[in-house]
Length: 327
Image (cartoon, rainbow, N blue to C red; front, side, top):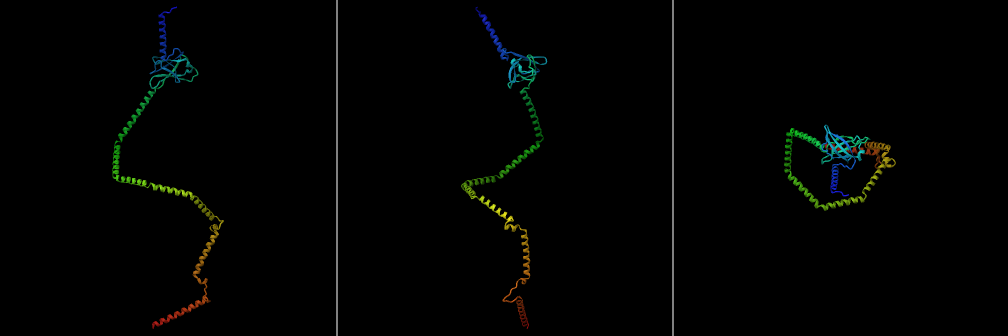
């Protein structure tokens, strides 16, 4: 059987049309080769949403928008979702319109509910619109600008009310700056002299760096000798010896400790000292009671008598001299 060329051309044209129609549907987000469920959602406003916009479930694309129809009171949106995912959508889920990103465009996100029943084919989702991020930023920016305007107005009011005080403050600052400059100019010579002295001092240090290093080395050597001589150990031993002596003095077992700690001995020595003082006073007052000196066997009474006779003779001689002198 011979197939005519017209039949071949017609068949090829039908195939091209079918493939083109499928490609257009596929590019629009609809795959006619898959089984899809259809759902309906009603919104008050669907700005930015278009037919073939994507429908996502937990971030995964599961369908697209089949049609958008404007009604009297709202907008009807028909969703086409792959039947493979229909069992994951509870009947109390929400279809939320949200921004697809900073580049614009809107998508529908299925927010899963907690019902145990699955949304049937042809069911109706609750519709909701998520606030646009850019719109929210614009609102926040407007609020921020309004707050900035209020702040600027407050600052302007504050500056206006205190303009005189601010002027005085600026004048005082200028006067203080002029005073500081004048003081610096007056003291410039002293400052230069101090800097010169500082340079001289640093130069002197540099010139005597070798001596300073030698002094430091000697000091280090001296400290090392002190460490080697175990001066600290000797001082510790001396302190321990002193502590031992002090402990023996405080103890009543030794002779010195008994002398220092025996109260009766102290009282006896005090009494003896008092008695000795009284004895010395009596000796000074009446020495002859305690001293009896005999020269060549003569007693004290004989010596006293001899002395009395001698004194009488001297007195008689004086009287005679006086009588001769009066004649």
